[in-house]
Image (tube, rainbow, N blue to C red; front, side, top):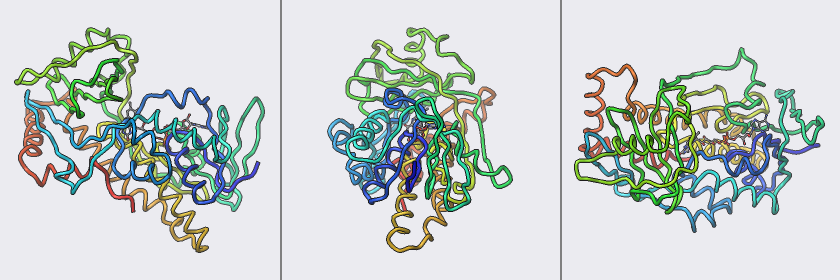
Length: 391
Ligand SMILES: Cc1cc2nc3c(=O)[nH]c(=O)nc-3n(C[C@H](O)[C@H](O)[C@H](O)COP(=O)(O)OP(=O)(O)OC[C@H]3O[C@@H](n4cnc5c(N)ncnc54)[C@H](O)[C@@H]3O)c2cc1C
């Protein structure tokens, strides 16, 4: 099998890249280790930055998002039983975000790819990227019980944190920057209309809580739990009672309960692999970097990477110049580190470390107070949340 761009992974990064390349007249093949149902059902991100929304629309994948997605003009911060709303358009010159689940983004992109895009092979597991530094890198993969080879001009590893692409960068050239956190998120999906019309980020002495949503009838809620927690330890009533305590306000706000349909625990990690390019192998999305979900940046960073790659390759095709491909890693990493910084700040602002001292608790509250009272500090949060520009 032979193609211009071999794409490993059909998460948001790989699927969007295939669409962007198709629109630019560049052929590609996508290899995905799981089946279609798995990719379409895996619950993860739900907040699309303004720039991501614009990219999906321009790529022709915005129709259902514009119909079913929920535009959000702000978030609420909750601390000390008080509420503070951050008004995005007022602080950023009109920017907002869209609540539209990653599962739906993937469904839309898969449907487009299968309708008129290049090959998208499910249950095709990449085993290794070979000859990344040559003109003809190859992906060895297993599909339908036998091994095959995909010969490419370029390989893009969009295979997430646990994928194989990153392993093709020699250890001597890899630099890894990493931090794990001593807590995770217990996330639930519940068949109940959201109790608030915007996301609520709550800092509480018992730990962080987040109120989010997937639609007008499905709530997505999270609780900070100790690292290594088993979701089954948490009975439904216990989850609702803990959420109620952490969201409690002095003005009597009420949380609506409903049947819980899914429960899982996500560990929290910050991770960056540099460089994001080795020869003709390019890393994109979670394959190269992970952020804790507090800043809602993971999917949006993945989109930024593949837009950068597609532009660089299109530029090469049109002009013969590889200058943008050559600076792919530096270009992406500038944005990645801003998102790492923001995600870390949001995490440490809102979560309670197991060994937090009363002094650190008061500092957290002082930081939140500063956001609530300084337009400059609040603007910094609003600009980062709605997204850094895609240069
Ligand atoms: C609970 C949770 C909440 C989150 N919330 C947000 C949010 O609100 N906003 C946000 O922006 N981000 C959020 N994220 C992060 C976001 O989901 C990820 O950053 C995003 O999925 C990254 O997309 P990706 O395409 O790079 O990787 P992935 O989505 O991980 O896709 C990688 C794909 O590669 C496939 N693959 C792996 N190995 C191989 C192989 N060897 N061969 C072939 N295929 C392979 C996998 O099956 C998978 O389909 C959240 C994440 C979690 C876990």
